[in-house]
Amino acid sequence: MRQVDERLQRLLQPVVEMLGYELVGIEYFPSGHHYILRVYIDKASGITLDDCEVVSHQVSALLDVEDPIRGRYTLEVSSPGLDRPLFTAEHFQRFCGRQVKLRLVTPVNGRRNFKGLLQGLDEGKVTLEVDGERLDLPLEDIERARLVPQLAGEDG
Image (tube, rainbow, N blue to C red; front, side, top):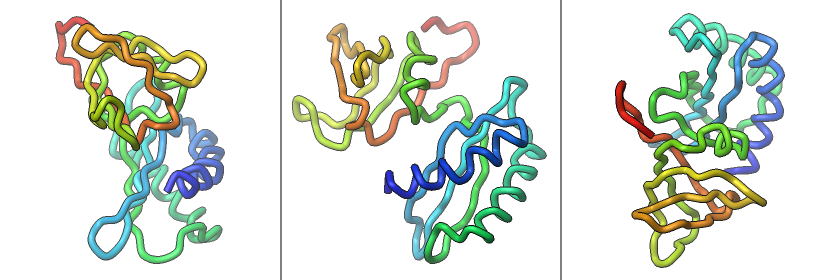
């Protein structure tokens, strides 16, 4: 699925950026008898329903012309939300100091799921502090990662 996501990223990023938004990332996954194509967008002032509608219209038109996906799918355009997904190395650097939940493709020490304090990214490894222990996890082995929502007044 990563190859599909990367191909879609290259196709959609220029259009989303031309509209004045950041393309945070793309998820493409099965849902029943078809697939969901979820496109996350952001901008400094936040995302409104109108923003999602504008991007959805342009992306849908591009996908109709380019036809990069076989079969049925539903397009969803969304803000990243409080539990923002992390897709790129830049995301892991930008949100250093925040709590994250992540899932690995292959287990480390018998575990695939981790929740901890994001310490940063160096040489392709994400550093996470979990229960007082430092873990260096290869970025390429991360299946998915999300910020843990932070309520107003909470530290970290």
